[in-house]
Length: 149
Image 1 (cartoon, one colour):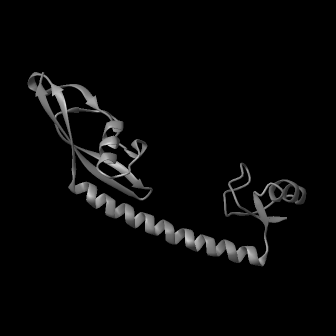
Image 2 (spheres, rainbow, N blue to C red):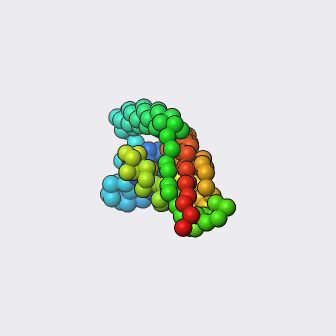
Image 3 (cartoon, one colour):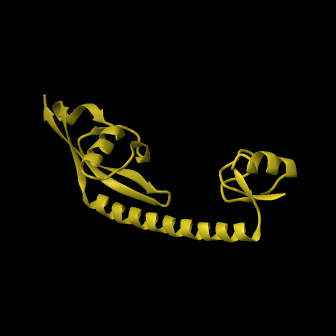
């Protein structure tokens, strides 16, 4: 029996895949639980239309990510930290702090999307890479200024 999966099924396939399974498994498990639909001419047409719409949406998301990357490259996120003699920083700036500052500035970026995970411990400007989309990586300038104290 050939079915089109509506969701990811472990050891069978991913959403949208057309797979061949045993008749009983397909009918009594996959279709009964709403995980798949039988493969027919109509269901193939619907699937191809859904894949086209999904591809168009994905292209739009990627373009939006590229525009966001251009905006982020021009801006700078500044942190004021305590430092000692010769610019030694007490503490550090983490990805969580960078993400929070970006969110306050109107950019919704998850801290897990920041690729450079090492805390910033030096004064000056550091470039930090951010994954905005699976094909788009932007950079943010993070500037640390210090005061002796």
